[in-house]
Image 1 (cartoon, rainbow, N blue to C red):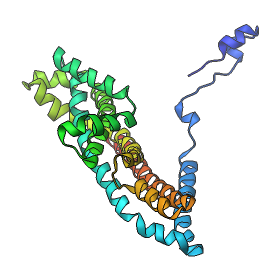
Image 2: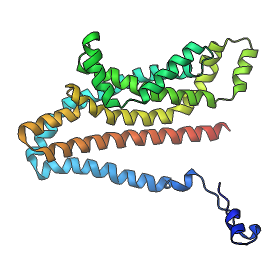
Image 3: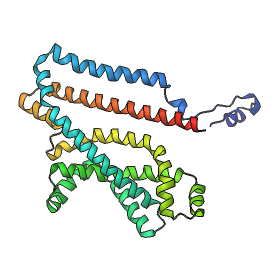
Image 4: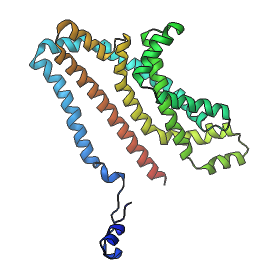
Length: 274
């Protein structure tokens, strides 16, 4: 909240005569109807364009759409595997960040700070070219490892913030009932934390889906690499990358809407409980 009383005093006006200006984050964000309208325009526009291009110009758009499905499957496989492993790493590191044991806390903190300080592209190269030969990891496994480690660090901070948002009195009440700290964490704190962290985790999933395009540099035949392979053989670079961009746009808009619906449901459920 911002008040204009200071400005009024500087101008020699009574503070009581100057209206108060209340600002919050929602003032800077478009309303739900406006956001949904923009989403519909972008989503259905991308779908319409994807359908119209092969009809208006069968060559090369039909060939491109027939060429990239294998890459789409690889993109989803890498993304889902990485999300699962990142959730496990993020949960363990997030708990470690609030652990009272100094060694565990330091290890988790160092992991989060180091990984978040190195670009994902550098991590991909390092794991594939440096650790890959030592651990016998191919491009596909290196890609999953790099994405999991990178996003695990970001999810760790989400889990840490979610756990710390739960009132401390709940942990104290659980300890008073005879539970150990571990039991209280898994049975009392984490179930409530899940509701808090689901929306930001959904946003991280969307970001990971887009960042999965970077794995094409490791010879993984994902969506972007398949588009690049088609372009390099036919020299239809504009058409190939247009189709790739439209597919990524449709996927990210679809999942962003799912995340939005999840947030709305959580808010509605929270109001009902209160």
